[in-house]
Image (tube, rainbow, N blue to C red):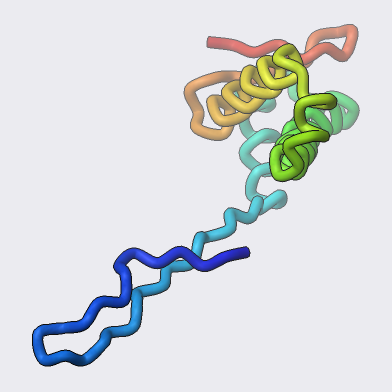
Length: 125
């Protein structure tokens, strides 16, 4: 990964050349334990007194992990332009954007989440 500089190395007033300022990009890491706790809390809040089964909780957690895996896959494909054109369809990107927005909403508390009797995920506004 190439380093980015914010200023070009230019001579100062006294003729001394200053080194450029180098800034590193921050990599975002996902705290899966904290995210799982938030998702379980949101699911239990939506289900109320009925609670949630283990299979319902696993369904929600697998969905969230799938969103993160798709994010990593799309990022990797975007670094390879030829492959990206062939493998990234507009429909795939749109589906990912919707899932990412829903996940962010659930984690932020603005969207509720539930699992119906057939195992499908239902989002609550």
